[in-house]
Image (cartoon, rainbow over all chains, first blue to last red; front, top):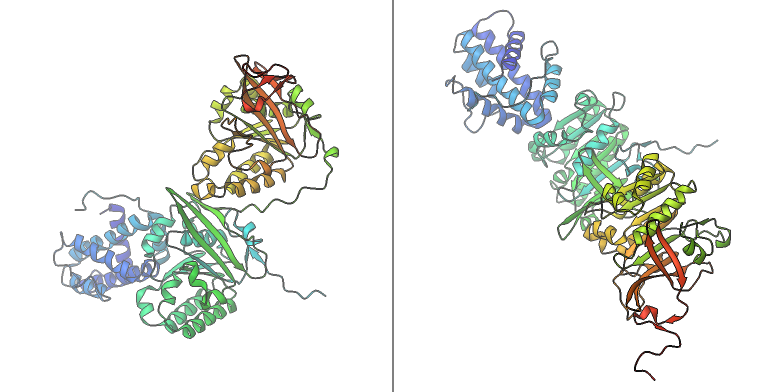
Length: 144
Length: 490
């Protein structure tokens, strides 16, 4: 996971969850951020394509957070809700870290396929105040 | 008052395509880009889209099945025309996906119309429309769908492109081909180990497109079209006597030509290997430059530096290249089309303002052509010679001829009738010495010398000597002096 993407993920969650750091707020913020991201990019690459990237990201994040929900047959349309439900069971710090791991990996994978510049452009549409920096492409060493 | 509606034409952004289309893409037209898989349909659509999309003229690219959009975006970004800065600003992508298809044609139409109403694009692309059309086996239903889609998009003043995998026989009876205002067919022809891409504008309502199959090339910059050369016009009515003469720079040859080659003529120099065809053409070009007529030499077998250093007067030629009076053009790819060659030569002619062009050699040119073009080499050459002469240049072409002493052949391709003049070089043995002979076999409309003349190649090029008036049978390979019977004959 790239540190700059992790930082963007934290800011996105902070914006969606608000100042309060209660487990419920983190879960709601994560659900919003997840849904906005998947819906926005689904328009571009399709729901199936987006779901598959999301599924892979969750699988990768489960190495560190094994309690993250894995879709029965790939993630279904309620994947973001399932993610939020799981995050709500943990303390805000752990839930934030797990969300950041999933979200940043999805964005990184998108960048590898369609280019960081295009991804950054589309993220800026969603969160104009935070997603200004295009991450650099390339595999991270910690990916299995 | 002239109340005729004027159709605005959009530039396609594809070099060469606007000329083929008859001026550009008609605004608000409903078009089909059809062809086999891998023919370049999606790339063509993207190139048109990025060339035209702007804040005032936004574009919407809808994908339905076909190539997965994540891969399409990945690959299309490799082309220089893909402008990431336009995405989301003036270019929007929308993936309707397989589930849209499951809901039927009505829902697809509703989805497209809703998006068009929301974003008001001036350009709409649907890729792949074939997957939509496959949803219906009912021709009436499909016709109704296409008609309503066309009307809806036209009513929103959108110029539309449907992209689909079709083969030409499918066009007959397909309502889509009837309703479309414009049809661009993309195809690939495989011959031996060569693939040639072609584009055909089989329909473009309201304007005169250039008929025929046009060569299409793809590079990092996208697609480029080489418009098919039209058949050359009939010879102009300018009397040969009134034409300016282009001196060859070889005194004896100019004498045989009654002053030189008439301007605007195409002349073929034929001869066996080593006979001096290249020497003759470079002399012709150099003579022109000395007279203030820039020249172009198109070479197919040697690189320009190699070509220049092996020429007998290479220091001067190299100097002429530096001065901008001479352009040596190297055209070597093995999947070349005649239109591409013509484009390269035309550009060089315009660049230096050439009045003389040498093509060295036709044998090399034929080898450089893709096999599918070699099959109709004569037709290709016919169109190229016409195109070159149309540039107001005098053309000299070399062609290697294998010596045959049992027949008088003028070219290995049966193309000699295409040219205005033929200069033939041959070897002959005289008194046990191999000599070179030169003959002006044809020079349309002028009373040229018919004699066979000896020539030598010296440090200054070809020097034409005396006519061999006292010999006969020179072309048979067994000449004899007139009045001196062959030994053994009575």
